[in-house]
Length: 240
Image 1: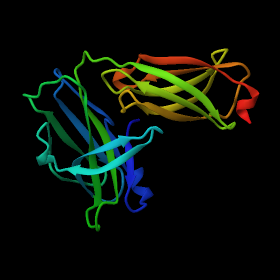
Image 2: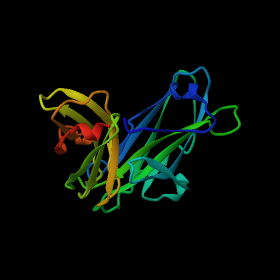
Image 3: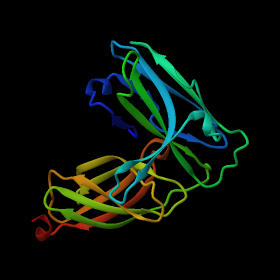
Image 4: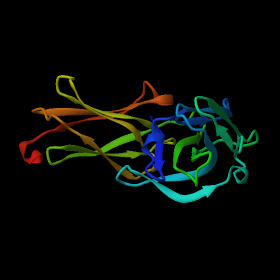
């Protein structure tokens, strides 16, 4: 959950051989440090190099690289070490991050930590994993509105939401029929844009008669929170 994989040279085999935990980091007044562990289940050693970057969320819910990358030594708000490490086959390594002890925390700040992964004797990055890092006050609240729901043919349900709160919620969208039967789930739903509508597409294998109910339910640090819910009336014309 929450991890974004960027392919450089279509090396699909590397995808299943490097695991990263955790896949999102939240720093604040009471937790200014974190440890990220990478494990290598492949037969080859890999060079891992961290860098700070950003992903921009479009109104269609997708995330796009901004193209800007910041070297670890040039970002003074959060320190990360080591600057580079060799991840041996069958082994694990850890990176430590520390939020500036003098940093005052008010509004949420988000930046992404990118781990470039290269074969030790290769010619450059083959792939990268990107995880979000948040700095936020623990008292900040999430506030989400479901604005519009509609269909796209008989294959997708479109849910448009808006984040009007102080933090970026993270969770999953769940669709139920009027009897409470689970119909579909969309995981890893983030609302990074503030006060702007964002649309998510949920694949639907089945459409019931009558109403459906959509719930946006929190994951990770938001587990147990119901961000928003709404009902939607299905009509035959909408499924044509």
